[in-house]
Image (tube, rainbow, N blue to C red):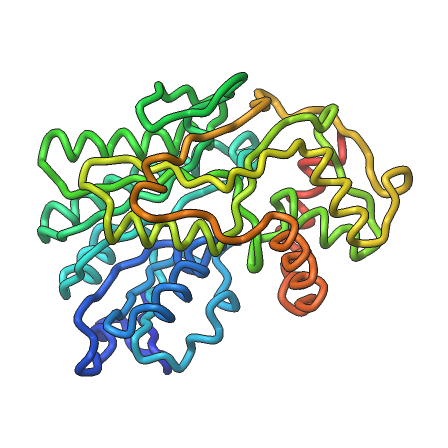
Length: 358
């Protein structure tokens, strides 16, 4: 049964947090104990005194209660343990009345989607369907789907705009594209007030250490080698999680229903360039701490997105990449108690499956 929490642990039939007189809005966030979702919740509650948030998270390996431990006594925050694939749990939460649904819940890592694609289809497509049905049933005024630039596929030249054809090339990006298409279909068919954001590669604190930056930083801090796929010349655009969260907030506030908004950092770098920066900042050596491994199957060479539409809303990234990267390294260095427990058990098995034979 789902467990609702705000401050202390409550029973499954507990209602939403008791609002103060100032609270006027209630948002339903899914996947809010993940990387981007937890940073978004913290930002939204910090900047909106009239807001309460109900957070539904399935507590998979990447959903970490420690990500929002600082909100344990916050009366405007409620946690519910459950999955977006369960209509009963979703309906119970949103049926109490919410002003918006923001869907961060997803299986997100490309490498894991190659090893086990079925779970991605269930969460990213079926789960999105359940949320859209709840939006329709309860006439929720706003629905925002958090997606990815990977749905555009490989971009050899130029930048992807929101009108470009989707061309996903991994089980992960295909499942995210499937979710996006459902959102747009519910707009066309039922007139739902939906929005989609597509973010570029995001980095920052509280990111599970399977993605490039946190994996490499934590490996290097432990004096371990880091694995680079192929020649390492794949290009990604890097966006700090605070800028990503603020972009989502701005789209939710000012975006036009039915529209898609790209959110990118404008910091294109090859994986090899990122690796050099991390190695240097951690005081290690490229010669001794980097090993090239067999490339990922279907690995897209380059992503790049045009952010003109998001900038027209007044959003712009604020964090310089060199400053954000240095602060991120410092955060992982100072928060070993957060990441070290994550790099055992399930993670060790995944890491072995992923890299041992490469």
